[in-house]
Length: 343
Image (cartoon, rainbow, N blue to C red):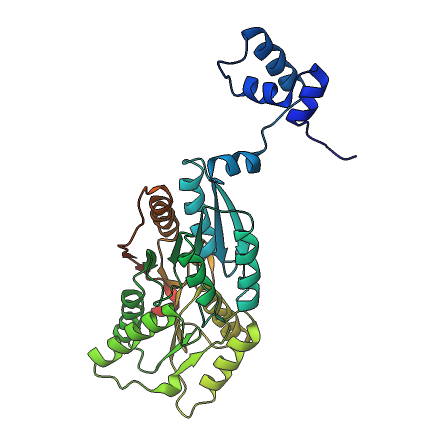
């Protein structure tokens, strides 16, 4: 059974009125008599009439919709960001349209194209791991589409950005492992070109050098798709375990990589933390329940989503072109648990 919503034309035909009269009656125009307004409104209510939001947005020049582009929603961090986005958007009367790229540049292009054809008022975006070129986004911004980045950002597009303090998170995670007695600390991370990789890697390196350790590139492994597949994380692990002096601790740089490393260590029967310490960037609510409980850098994902949305709406609502932008850095917090503390 197909559901066909009634239109203004349907109401006009049923009541033997013009479409213009019905439209004005529904808008409570002073041009229409009270008797006719009541007739139209009663009929519309009884027959479940709903205004066409697309038609209304065309009249107003606004769709009251925001497009969201994330790598995946199957990730605690991004799901928490989306919750933050929705908490602001719905309060302000905006709908959100969520798309995921699955770490694919081509899918990112398709999603963005689909969103812009929906006449969105603005876009919130975290880049895919395959995205090197952002010309498609620069073109949209030049055409007047408000864009705000969060998490994985572009350095070449001048707009608002909201990120976690990735450097601090990487520094504190590595420093904690050093102070816990680990001496050969490896780092498994996302592709080298992404903003979060550069920042977390810089924190890792700074902690090592501050404590007098050499930075050995053999202990740094990149997952080309951010750990999307278990295979790429396993390859990184296998290479580390095959080193003449294998690591005694791992700092993993994302939710997905962290949980995969934990699983692979269990499968290899490597005891955590006795034989291998582990610290990750991870926003899972289950960190306390993992075996062992996971030491993790926590990002304020909900707050990142809220702030990014507030900044996007400030551009959308501005009566004048916005030319001054800022990058907001949200604090991270290291939660120390059993995976990184030797008895």
